[in-house]
Length: 465
Image (cartoon, rainbow, N blue to C red; front, side, top):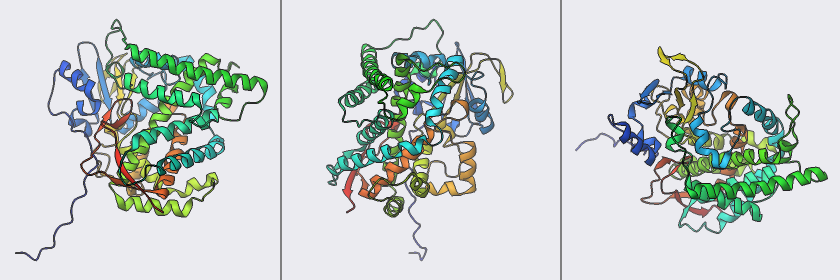
């Protein structure tokens, strides 16, 4: 018998897929990759500053060293253009979207799109975000009975509602909005963005093949978006268009050419706003709720903050500066589960990385999944610790190794919107409900369209009042 005090139980780390151990053949790697990008990668990527992959067809360089990451992401977009294979993989839905274009076309698109997301625009659409949160809390009230509930479906719903309200001034209950929402869910199931063509540059002669369902769902979505764009164009012509994001984008001329988006071009851009904006917010919000359910101390801190800060009516935009804990939790969730696990670029000309020759056309990969959990950058990298952002290590990581929205010239135009939307909705949910984990349900992250749970995320909800 001993007088030694019992040691405190170690906190359970958030779920993380096991990394691949040892080397595998290219054929084995491709098979693993098709099942899940994350678990197909070797364990040493969580410590390596750079890794090179060689095949008979190409060389691929994964970059983790902060200076190298900044060189790729912050450098000229023409030096590191988006991969052509990504374009081919996403073409059925996105066509010539800003997400996958390069060169003159991309620069023209950003000159029109960026003003819609600058300055006071976020302040102007804040009430629409609040309205989406109010509607979501009302929907969740109907299932807050303490039984297991699929939370990813709910975060997808509210994230798409935010898109429709801020972009087209309509709630998701509108028949076109609901049809588009259903269409995107069907398209995700038919064709996840994270596929082999998006990460491995097969030879140029290799055909890009899309399933019949992928083509059909993409066509249906584009037709619905086309209806919205045509309706808005008519309202603009009649002088009755609401002052929302769609109107701003469709009426902003390129300052260099004077051209505005035609209806077909607008469909391309709206498609990526819906796809990327909806998926990013939905995934990050779902993981945030799971992490809070498994860390009740942090959940109660956020609930108290929300109760103190939020009023019953739509608060002024300045309230966002007071949701500090909610912002820290949302940021930590995106560190652990970055919505987009890998950014894929190409080298436009020969160069050298860490003393190694990089040929023109080589695949350049920046992996937020590995960078955000890098063992040589972060203290306790696999732990959920929102308080880290107030430490010197966390501040250095935020500056050097936190890129959920990319950075530099190709940073996501809606990054500031997402960082307002996520903490606001999180606070509204936590003020209304208590979230608890379901015994035996541990969601395992996999990379498909974004980093989602392989079998969804089930939580128990109960009202706080």
